[in-house]
Length: 251
Image (cartoon, rainbow, N blue to C red; front, side, top):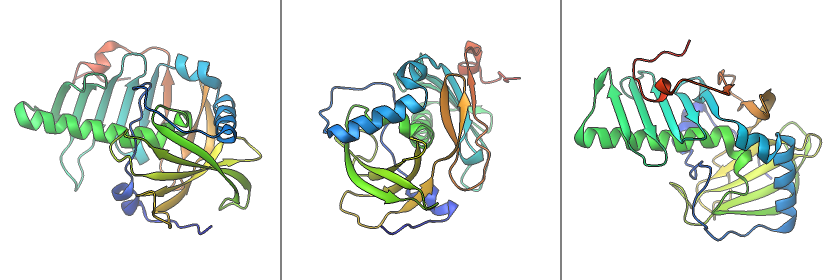
């Protein structure tokens, strides 16, 4: 299989992902027995379902940029977007459950249509960025089709089982397809390939999932092959003000 790597700028334009939430409707899925067994073993290797469910607050910076705080138990998020050539500084406080909240641009709170546009940007940023963080925990999510398509050699010459992920009427771009490489020696997801559509034969990118590190009860990958510090933290408790007060600063 051809391995193709692309630049950072292209990555941010190409990636489009299914929703990364902890639930969802009862969407029919197709999972072959071997794929299910591998996905369940991956979950066990990362700390197990109990470890994932009991983990509450996770903070990270998407490729060292957008700062996310996520309360997994309430669905509240805080996204701090630094100013760049793509736009001004933004702060988004919202509920993933209701998709409502408040948004500030350069310190000015938005209302009306700009507020709804800001919330939509926050939602899409979270969908994208959280999938980059948590995809291996979501192999058996509602709406995910999963099948084992064989074995292959990863870019670092190690053997892996390859799972193909497709989606049924979920997420922002349900036509996407992924190949997920589960390393034979570690039992962890250590590479993935992205395809914009199910019939695309060459991947838009192939990247590693590397530097798996313990955070509380779970393991998280801290690298995607570009060297940026994702600044990942897991907390048992965080003040409610973090998700509601725009002036709150986490010390």
